Length: 95
Ligand SMILES: [Zn+2]
Image (cartoon, rainbow, N blue to C red; front, side, top):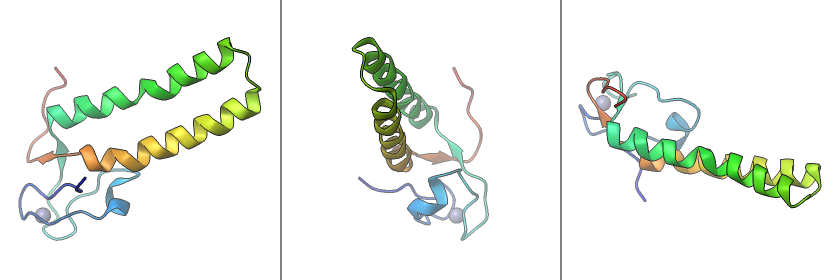
């Protein structure tokens, strides 16, 4: 898996530049927008945690264990998201 590059100067982003929010390129300072494909891929990850919580609650697993494992799943998802990002020069419509 590779981290994305700037659409303008091909600067390779560092993971820490992308994990909390997408910042402008540190090299050319151009704004970065997610391509429609990478945004759709990111949306596929978001229900994983909710599905997990529903399953754990339905089989009566202890709430604190569920919360703990959910936090780990969320951390892993947010750690992996930057690797599926691809950037373009303008914001693309959602649909
Ligand atoms: Zn750049």
